[in-house]
Image 1 (cartoon, one colour):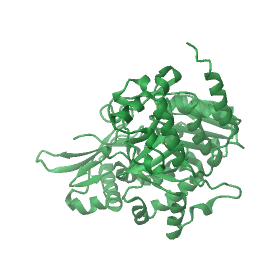
Image 2: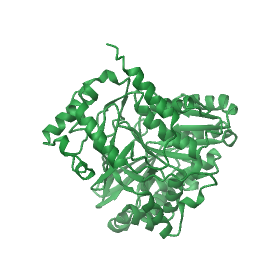
Image 3: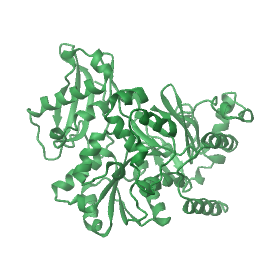
Image 4: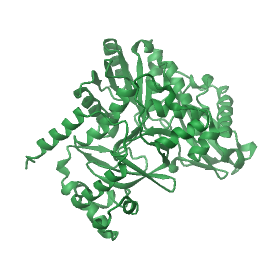
Length: 496
């Protein structure tokens, strides 16, 4: 039966989005999360069941302090225990007009319904990037979607949000070649000259492959004034510099932006010129980064709007509350990370001799929004002699100038036993297109990875005996079907 009230709701919601710029400050995140809790408790059947099972009376949750005691949700205890319609408001799956599917990186793929109104909240995050970093309000922009198209969240959702920006008045045109490098280069070559700038939106290793393939075919990237929107994994500042040089980008703080996103709720936070400036400072000061983040790894560092996505922490992992087709209250996504208030971040950097806000140009707004940092998920680490070895540490070892030209940046990390049952750290590395395995390159890569592990990972330096610190490196050609099959989301660790 037709929902006759839906057009009015959609028009009102879209009108609000199209007439309102994204906020540069927000102070009422906790209150917004509390209000959403009461709405969801009253309208979502599965959440009402969940609260009854946990013995929680919604009427008793009156304050922010009460809200902090509400039981957590996760996929196993909530999403997978209830029929999909009961996870939606009023038990109506048909109130959502589209579904996204998770990548399945932690198990079976999960379906997440959403409506066009849910896209507003995520489109506001894209607007923050396009407006503040890329100045897309003053420049004609070709947005090239390089994420896989289909039911996965990246491609279709990103295209929809970019089209909302175009409808809002930004001079943006969207092209959707998906993860087909040949088609991407055709689109850039044919349409790019008609625009002031070209934005490539995709998964970092894949975007690097696009840039490298374009160089091999003679694409003049600097003439296209390339920008990048990246999501899906943590990358280093060395990676940003390497890919930026190849693409002709000249301003690291304004030319690329990483998104912290998930199929569960879309984009949760975005890099801003301010957060990139702070992260680049911390990348050069591992001691300060370890003091701030409590870890030797350099996380993704983004700013977020707490009235749209409200973050909390529990035992070094992140929780968020946000509205979607499936509203999520204190949802435990299992990402390792934490939250840093805006003032605290600036004070910390200034105490270490750097002011990230000082680099803003005249008239450039400083977004007074809190920061969230994200390492990724602990299931993707490898334990070696009692030390946690993280893919992020290995990545930096592959980004040295003489190595980065010859590899794609993808690898598989394992701790394994040899024939004598001795433990060794194994790294299988994907070579760049057209590069053949060269035995002389193996010790160069192994030494570079060892150097970065010792520099960045204090556990590795102290726990692993020196004779076991150099990894065993194996080289595989691009698209190797065993380790790097095309078209599949890459996993950087694998059981031995």
